[in-house]
Picture 1 (tube, rainbow, N blue to C red):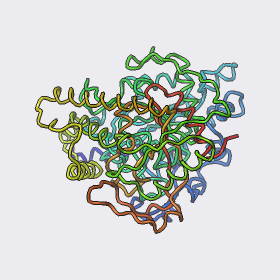
Picture 2: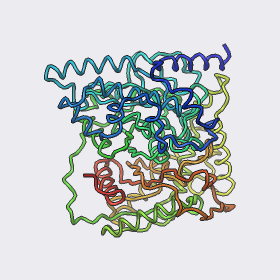
Picture 3: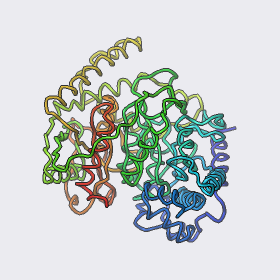
Picture 4: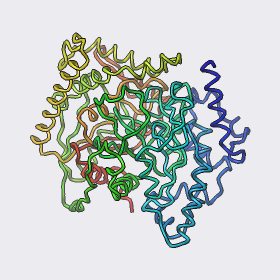
Length: 558
């Protein structure tokens, strides 16, 4: 069967799982200019989900007025039932799918059945666990027993998962309700969420912009409040870039802290280079904290042998008079920042300084962004299995992958390798990997020395050179990938948006520079963000300091 027919059959099967009463009216859809991916439509500010009339007033309140902690409290004390919360989020996710194409698999009947079971437990005075009744969305690469984990690739179609991934089992053990899986890019290695199986996910703030990737479906779903808490994965920025593009919080933990085993991958089995990590996205930072606190309450290493058996540490509160020493990334000359990103960083720095924290500027020669990017790109290039899968299935290569290729070629044309010269002359891949791993170790040692020299508590940096941009135009991700190369935990904090302060500010790309295209008129209104990071396995400190920084930038949450 031609791949187009296979895909059409799969999409129809997925669409048929949305109940007729949850479908958006043709009248509402007719008000949207098509194609949506080329039209600047804002489903969030236009309150399109409310206007669809599909959710009841109570369901709208459930999905809009509660933080994750408040939802869990209401579920625990009986103010809300798991059945009504699950139905509310199933309906909202279904509407989100029809607007921006953020879902892959849906498990609505199964989720509602589980919710009724959880309510029966509650009626007996029992809770299933600390996440009792909480709907949680998961990225498509997680296995969920009885569904498919296609990851948008034809080679994996029609393969039903015989068991769930360990993290999914843990979430269920903790009392969560798993109800949807979310869209990803072809090969899982671009900052998009577009593939030949499920199509393209759109940014709900502006459908002409990308939602980030590879956890782009998660970012878009959560931005539309179709999920209170979602789980993505990150190997080069795949949690943090969707958080940036879609205006959510996102956290990339240190590798081997969060269960990440038994997942669908398109890489060569056993090739452990830069490790992928699983991490949460949410619209409230407290929800990120709850994810970690509850996850470690049942010793996750008992479920997944790929992680370190390290409990989540409960840190003492930060003293009120504690002033943090925060390193500030200076813009790298090869990877210039778009004007709104530069302004966001400057504003954040000023606010943190005004709050009494000590800001230490870190020059490009200290941050080694180019060197880390160089090593990371060389390591990623060692494994060509993903594109081999695409070729073997005779499916077209996604435009975002082709664009990254052109960006890499441009980088090579303007940058002479400084830390991995002649590595490509080595034909033996393991010999090449040995050199790259040695270079990576040198860079991690340089960062240890940098941290010690400045007595840093944390650093802030832009999550990317840009905000969300035109579809398939994001390209490289140096400001996130370097942290995967170092294996440092990092969080993204939404902070403002592109607005009038950025109008008329020029952006001219120099001959020796690489960056996405900047279009103020197209991107106006897109979310902005900053990134906070600490050193390896200091995830608890990273989250605590992120909470402090968020309080300064976005106001204390009462």
